[in-house]
Length: 163
Length: 114
Image 1 (cartoon, rainbow over the protein chains, first blue to last red):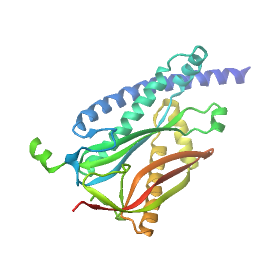
Image 2: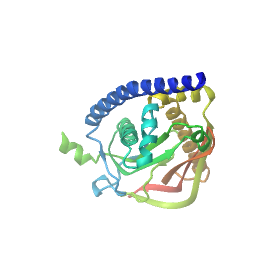
Image 3: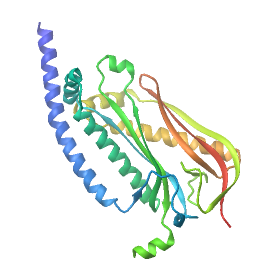
Image 4: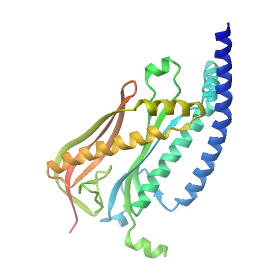
């Protein structure tokens, strides 16, 4: 009986901590994402394979950004309840959206360090990290989001046009 | 051409305007299997209560990816290539707490069009 109470109390406590700090963290993360997206807007990102002819002969390099995101305890409980009825799981959507935008931003940051202006053939990948064994024990979701592509330096003509 | 320390250029594209591929040298690959160490696992477990980025794992996977890429570059260097094109990544969970990162691509000799 006492054990049950402790178990329930710890679920409520962890849920509350997860909800409060999770929401704060999410809001802060979104603010930083929006700010950095504005900062890196000049680096163009395409998922087409071939850069246009004006990039011919320019320097290129592989760039990659990745992030591992975990879900929070409260939203995990909510999602488990929601899965009974089906429908969209907003908390997981937010987690994946944040992670993917963060991965793209890190890829853009690497492109800027390499002096590139555009990234072509961008691919987004998602993989699950929490193993089946941990899931059986009620493990929380843990996803890796990767963005990679080929960064190209600006054609000399474009730099002249921009300045 | 943008190169890194090993002198092998990487790209996930297979045709390059302004460049010609003079030789194809076949598939090269690099992989690494890493386990998250217990300390990191515990920290990630705690971080999992509030959600958000798990920095320990991000770092671990970035290190592993660099390792996989550099092994692939070493193979490319050994066959006499100067670039690896059409690079693909793949991540697999092989056991609880261990992940394999694999990078593969085609080794080529590439040069600017005269």
